[in-house]
Image (cartoon, rainbow, N blue to C red; front, side, top):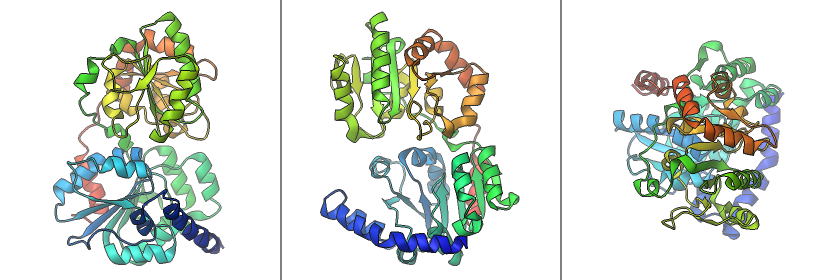
Length: 411
């Protein structure tokens, strides 16, 4: 019965999805090449090497596996890396990775004839699905073609597991994975509960913990007094007013305080700047002036990792409003920036439990953000040191990478 449900849902969604792709082009909200990619039509030349296909949902997921991508490029130069995502921001940012040879394109829709067209062109020798997106038709089509497949840094929340349990691993195509590498024990348990054999599920360190930050921008370091700089990283709609109100309160006590605000989606920058203007705060675009305003808003992609070292305290975005689950604490941790999170951090539940037990971060309750940030500034060095002690730099992942490569058909 669950298989019938998947087929029915696919059938019902096919026409609306095809109309949506067409409208995106007509309304100039996406390019013709993007539309072709969504329909499984390649816009690159046929591959001359065996292809390893990797799919990531977002820029964060793609960034988290960059060390693994570099490993593949270095150790398997006779293979071509094909990266797909549904996120335009991820595509744009990854195109700037000059150190990584790969083909980037928008992912095909999860419709059987589209997926089969895509597979017929690229003939992947292996497939890697990153984190949490589940595409039943894609997984089943790969299995029919006997393509070795793994799920890497896999995450399955309590809520998602409850919903998916009604369908089961077989209907979702999950039983066809050679290995599911779960990023935490809770996710591993959820996959097993869905019906995945336990020997096919392995818990590994969260790939986001492997992050190695690039050196900070020396020019910007000279402009910001680190002890008086707050970073709000990857913020979402509904969070900026809360952050700006808290910042305004802190600024009354410390006029030298500066806020660097990085919206998760750069198209929201004008809206975010207006929030600051409405509060009579000096606001500008990050990097435009030698003397930064009270609030500077970052309007570009891919620069956040170089900004973390500028800030004494980092407020992790996606944690002040429900239904997002919070973003990674590993990047501010690696930059020795004290971590503040709101109450909604389910994406990194285990990490925050560990950090909290070690008194290595500040968790803000609703309506208490200003107090939480003030505490973080007063304890910043201690918080950062404890966090780095709890989560030291990861060991060499080569042994893990070798195992993953074997599971996806590389040797």
